[in-house]
Image (cartoon, rainbow, N blue to C red):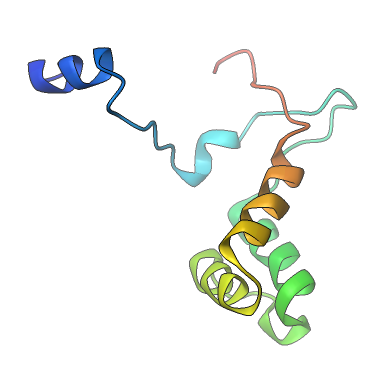
Length: 92
């Protein structure tokens, strides 16, 4: 059951939807490419921003380092470019 106050905040557009890392599982592109796992995404981020020594490290760790090495905007743009081509799965 959703609390009454939360419903009111949603109606007032005072909320932000936050989804966990598993929310993209099952999403595909128009070319049927599947979204990456958290570790695969971490490795892509590591390769772009940090180098191969960071491959295999946790997503939250490499993400924070990548933001520090570039900027939040640059990092967010990179993630946007990765996920923008994806469409929700039928079960979403």
